[in-house]
Length: 273
Ligand SMILES: [Zn+2]
Ligand SMILES: [Zn+2]
Image (tube, rainbow, N blue to C red; front, side, top):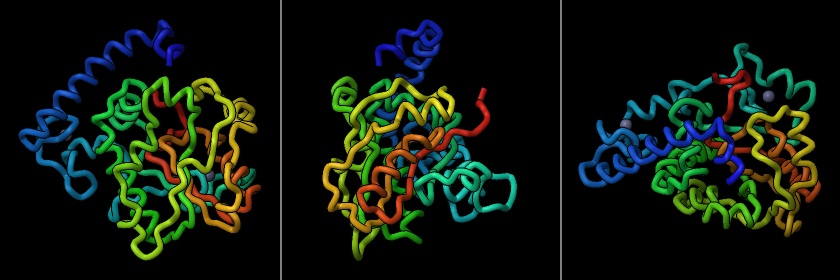
C-alpha cells in the first residue's frame, strides 16, 4: 500500500497509528499472560462474543448485534434507518443485485482503528479477535438462513503478496462452519471468485465512480458451483456497496438464485469527521 503511506497528510496519522498498534500488541501479549482484554489489557474478557475482549472495549464497537440491542438497518444494504421501513430509499429506487446484508457493527471508533491496523499495518495478532466478530455475525445469519456456498470478496494476488496475507482468508481459518451449520454446512469456496483488476483505495470515492471502478472486476472460475445456489459473500467492510453489487451480478449471471452479504463493519452514510 505504498500510495496510502506516502500521502503526506497520512504521515502523522500513520505515526500515531503505529504507536497505538504497538500498544495493542503489548496488551495482546499481556492478555495472554494475565487474561486481560486484547485491546486495553485490562478488564475481564467478554465471553459472549469474543473471549479476547472486555465488555468495555466491545462497547466501543458501535451497535454490535445482540438479542437485546438490534439496530434497525436496511435489510438489503445495512444502512442505519431512522424510520420503521424495511428498506432504505436507495435500495427501493435502485435495488442492488444482492438480497440482504448483515453487518456486525458500524465502521467507526475502535473497530475502524482495529480493522485498519489489521489490514494495512500487518497487525495479524488481531485476527483471532476479528474472526470472533465475524463468527458472531455468521451465527446470527445462520439462525434464519441456509446458504449453499460461501465466497470471499477476492483481492488481487499482487495485493496478497504485497501484504503477505489475505485478510479475509486468515479470518475464515479461525471459523468452523460445521459448528455453525451443523446439519448441512455450506460449501466454503474461497477460490471460486477472482479479481481481474484492481482499483485504487476506494474509501472516499463517490458511488458513481466506484461503480465504474468495479465494473467487470470479478469473474467466476467454476460456474457449476453457483447453479441455482444461495450464495453468501463475506467481506470486511461495506462502503457504497458497489463492489458487493458487482459480485452479486456476476454470481447471478453464473446461476445463483440469491446472493447475501455478511460484513464485519458498515460505513455510515454521513462522513464520520
Ligand atoms: Zn478492553
Ligand atoms: Zn438499503
